[in-house]
Length: 188
Image (cartoon, rainbow, N blue to C red):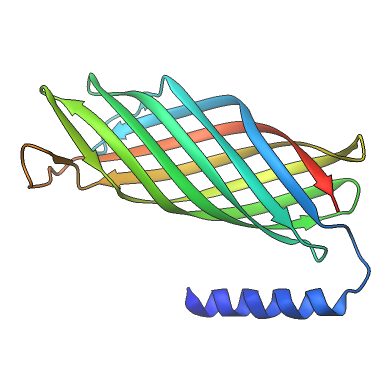
């Protein structure tokens, strides 16, 4: 993973210095307009999440590469027990096109937390891992760009602990969300 990161950084620096004039830099904000999600307890059948939301910011450079941060929150229940999960991700993307654009990106979960209410106790964890993928279409709009796209998150939470007991329970909750994104980008 470090080798990939060094390669990516070297390629980014090399292509940035070689392209003196190119597409504009972009600052983007996206938010979900339609969400679907499931929560799954210990590999049982997934249950629909009652609510999923999020937001994302990204910066794209003139050479097409970009990075951003995103957040996802999902509330629902598993096996009749209420659960709330959230996750933050770091995303890397590449954009094709100047005025009309197509952006494809992937990300990794950097932080998150979950709370599970079970048998009268509250269990919480910050032990989270997962991945994200996104695709955006940019359309010229009012001197910037209108963004429409899709985002998917697959996040796993484990190591739930209660304040009453220091020992973790073996529960694993997996959150899978799909979001239709709408946003706006600024050129500079």
